[in-house]
Image 1 (cartoon, one colour):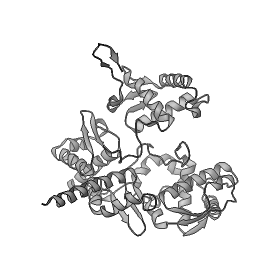
Image 2: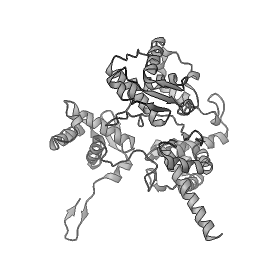
Image 3: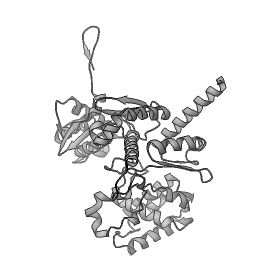
Image 4: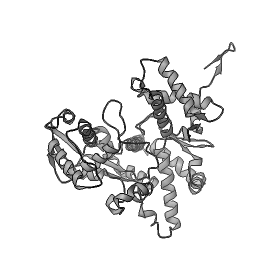
Length: 410
């Protein structure tokens, strides 16, 4: 093989690896919002799609003419560690009201290629009034209008709704605001990653609160692994083990072995599982860190994640790193109340920092938000008011080194 051919092969491998990691961080890439990333995925869609299908069982949909690439991730969410976030300062997560409005707004947008914010709000008012399971939508309330705008702006960020004239945010100040939208109904449909539609899960509205824990699994059931009421073949079982293990490896910051099922742990520890792990990591540009407690896939370029730790973006992440020192340096579990005292001390020591946590319960809220960050990164486990460090937390433990003159330095 000539030197030029070798260079082309290396360049293709690097591009495929980069496209895989970009899609892991941003499963929906639009030509308007990220033209370079979209062009890369478009050109390398065949090997990238094969990688996701083989290792994770996920489908990659690339629409060159419509201008988007969508990685359809399917996985049962067991904890709300990746919520939708408001496009405002602070990036607060969606609450229940915003999720409700998001679903209603998306449903009402399906039948209109062009609309205005006023007409859309009226349709949402009518839809909420017609469904006894939905609370009414009141456009005279500024709080309601703000939640409505947050849902719309999220759809804008996905490219499913495009502002032709005006500004969505203007609706917060006045229900008479004039904003014109163009709707991409095809992309709206692509936003749903669940293989089973919500309408196919026949659950009466009054039973939803009681049966909610089982609903995510029902929506995420994939028949390629066999129906729940039928025996699963050995081929389907092995396919499920491969996909379930690799979904965790590419989605979770760290996979602790005690969090895997016995079958998953056996698969990952087998010669076949280890060989596939190294091959998948090499093809995607990851480094593999294997320890007795767990496995991590590390991206040297930081492309595969949309959130980092440590990170000084946000008071909660700063507090999380500082409180993690307390947890990792303790000889055993740490009470949440002890961390609250530490947060109180931080707020007193830095009076100009974390102004959003200066209320009476500010220290407790800061601890709760910091623990959410640490839990999302697999660094701690909170149980009954007690915080325990996970093995991966040792990576951030404060250590001391001895200098030549014998003095200890942190």
